[in-house]
Length: 110
Image (cartoon, rainbow, N blue to C red):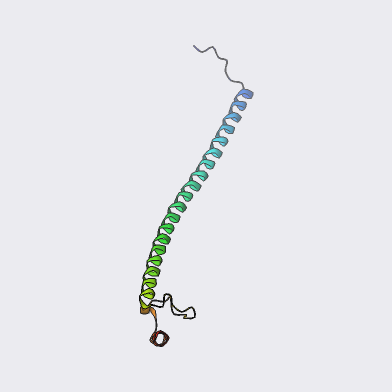
């Protein structure tokens, strides 16, 4: 047997109002949580993408350093030390030059 008195209409309406407020607060907090979780997920994806870009850039840097080292060795072996400063084709690999550009490069080299 319960000793509690039955709820009055006013007390019932007050309790109902409190429950509505609790529900609204819970819904708001869930929405906020979901937004923050999505932002963290996006930040994680951005970090992964940036790490990939860093890796590619490091690889490209290493490749360019090796290419530069090889070119410097070639120029050192020719005795001139460095390519002439005015040669616009000096940094383009030979296999990327057109026939006309190759002819110009050959003439300036000789």
